Length: 295
Image 1 (cartoon, rainbow, N blue to C red):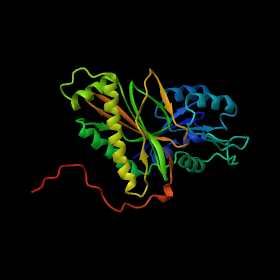
Image 2 (cartoon, one colour):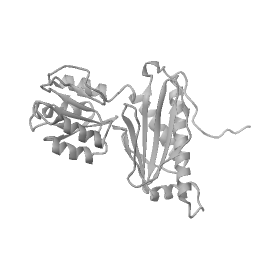
Image 3 (cartoon, helix red, strand yellow):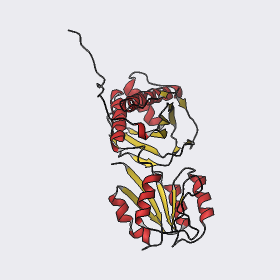
């Protein structure tokens, strides 16, 4: 299950709020805010937010300032305005392209699916991407529990140690980010390189970059099995307290958290561009990494 976190801005008992159960049945996690002031606080607080839905019939004014505040916090977060008297249905980065004034749950479900770009993160692909990352972490001596993958905006709040890898090809482009605290990176370094008691900050970045590179290599094989190819760029390391990274693409980000008894690693994979119509069926299975013994 790919988790999607939706914030509904609606009065208690409003039409969209009453339909929260239908969204939950589709796999959405739903929170509610009564009014724009409460919604802005929720957007600021909820790191996993995938989509904001506003019932404009019950919140009839203040859209411009609300949108400006949301964009200041999350420039690419999808915001769906339903039932606006000015015939606005959806605002997602660009000017609205539809002219419906009705506020219905069916319209919400259709537009929410479109805005969250489910064709980018099909369940089978997500499972294989997650498994590829899990296998690499196991190779580095980390046995982890992983969160259910979830969709979020493509603004990433970075940790203390961060490795960023871009990739691009004819049918696919995007980036992968692996982030951790210094303490967690140190623990990971000690597990993988025992005896190296005092690694430098550069050593921690290099290790995270190597992990990210191997994870993306595994993901690359997943997509190549479906006839989508890309090249991996040189790793980039970002430092700075409370830094953030945002790509210019319009697609949301797929995030997975890997945790063990010593800490947490967060992986974010974003396909800014994907020729989803070109994805071919799997033609062959790749052998898992192992040893060959010649007899």
